[in-house]
Image (tube, rainbow, N blue to C red):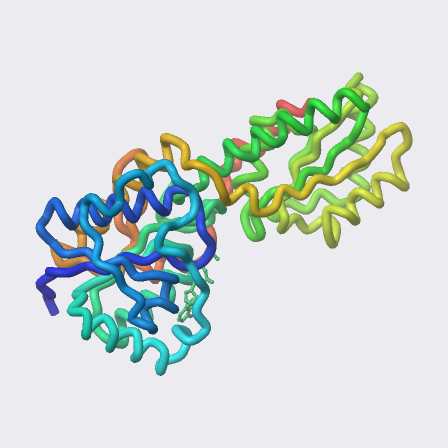
Length: 328
Ligand code: ATP
């Protein structure tokens, strides 16, 4: 059924990522440009169920393009996973006369939107906001580029200490399922080894490789470990193993954690967010629904939700080879 869109809701859902505010701003301003009302929905699907809404206009999103986090707050909602919860959310949207919504979040948020669309024939559009870059249908998710820069900056700083003290640092970065962050920051930060979920190097080969790099004259080492790496149970187990099996290194661990999700979005993420917001609103206006907005070869693109939530995006094998050559 073709819906006439007069009022669009916008929400941020799941884990936050840099660029979410820039995307909210873009959705709000694209609505204003097309003379459509825009409603901010607080706290993700939780706020949708509670009817926690605020009317937004072009001026209400001033001064946020450079801010990390999300002014609309984010949440994970257990109730939205139930038909009762989604029915309540639908009633709230109807009461507020909202005709469609744009959800900025990860694959879980898109799954929720897809189910909601099937149940209530309600127009929905998604913007991928996650630092992991693990979503199929876009070369870049919102926040990924900023997170890469944040992590490289941290690695550079840790490198100063590592080389001053002949230390070996294991630096754990985000990436539970996919090693995009680890692979890229490992190359950019000059890591001696990069451990990612896609490859299981094994503890012995890791030690062997570190020995080789020591023999070749390196006095300090950085090993970047994605949190989903399968070699050890944790980065601390890797440390213990190397401690026991290698001499002459003072081994340390640094888990970067949530700092990777914060901070002012990069220029790339601000521009990407602005493009994605416009694409999402204009797609809804032209009657499209149930898609995720993405970018491919610098062109905005739509991927059906059911494809976007299936599987995880793959790492670039060429980068793996480059990293092998760089760590010689
Ligand atoms: P992140 O990448 O940060 O994990 P995400 O969007 O994948 O972001 P989730 O916690 O998986 O984060 O999902 C966000 C919200 O989407 C959930 O709290 C829930 O309300 C809704 N959701 C997720 N999966 C479903 C589902 N199968 N059915 C209904 N709602 C869902």
